[in-house]
Image (cartoon, rainbow over all chains, first blue to last red; front, side, top):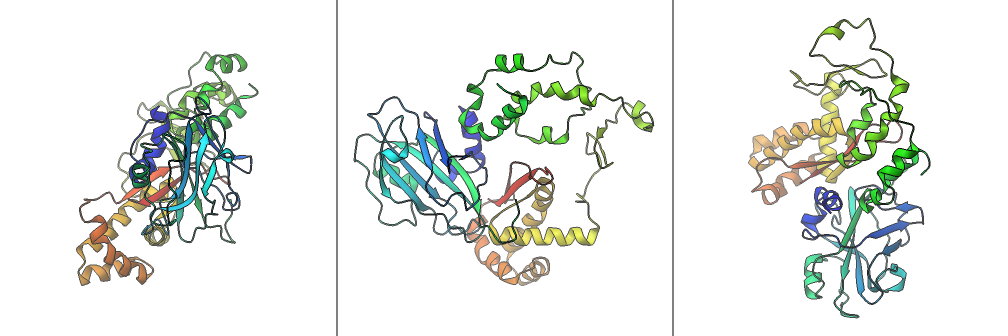
Length: 173
Length: 216
């Protein structure tokens, strides 16, 4: 399974956001029903305005999962003093379905890049029971490790990340 | 499975989802024309971009030998070094000669005269120190590393002379002052290697191999 982990380790998602884990589920994140998120690829800001469709594998519909989307490079990768910024959180997602079946505790916020190229990380955690996850008070200064310890989520079961930067008028593909 | 090119695109976009499990090598091999019995010579005439992809794509690219017959022209007879044992050519469209080794090459020239090269490297390091992560071509990213490390080393020293040396290199003085203020906490324990390069997909317009370079 190190094939899945290598891009996460190279992109320092594993070092800065979570600790090293073994992915046990498949998670597909698709924006606008055509753009699939692959580790380290770059997406245009116009694509990521509205929330994506997140499909997860699982064994059955009884296990509940939590999806978190954070930006570890807030407000700028050269000086991330607001690390991390929480963009989206959906809890109580039943296995083998997608994120629209869960409860959206923190609504999807369109990523706005001011400076630099930001990484946006999707993490999937397995909950021990239903409705065990507490909503955080603020979006800034979010710490994924501390949050998963507080809510008993442990290590993530799946992760993916993409890059995005501000689209200036002169920027060509 | 349709043509190989669609499978190739599949390998690029679906790497993290284990696309190898969706189609098997056996079905792919049967769909392709029979592979060429002749192995391509070690100075392979594959387009250079095939080598630059990540190692996990090699499994898909090994079947790429199906296209080798299209380029099976003999070596140009006029080349004087063909008979020499240690030289290996790659055929590049723009007429540049590329060797397989890097013997004696000290300075990356970046296809520019010296004054423009210096200006390019100065502006790239300024932008990297300002934004924290930038996306450029791989040659520029690996050429920049030396200058970024030099600037951070100057900031670690922190004296007035070093500050003035940094001001003479970096284009914006706000960045120099911010750098001198934060480098001691951020890179105090780290000895060298202040940047990281992550290779990424080629650029659409000219298929140039791209990379992200970021401050560690």
